[in-house]
Length: 115
Image: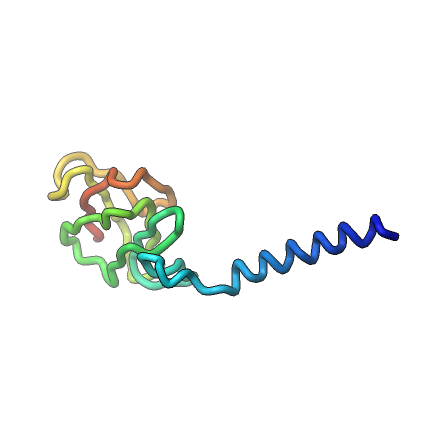
């Protein structure tokens, strides 16, 4: 009997910890807005912790700086097609497509153009 109680108690404890981790709000000391799903527009995220570090509502083709802490991005809505990222601050040089679900090291891309 004791053997069946211990695994059940461990399972309940694990479920409680998982529920609290999802239900509790982010710490007030967090620097950015927490991840939201679904979200809107073009959203840049940091990793560890995953926070929103920048967003753009609609594509306009203007060269913009990539947020300093950004390590990945998603185009949730707004008709974003191509989002090339550049390793220069003025959108010059060779571009890499950021609008594919992948990440990059912090600081790799300095500018982008959302079209």
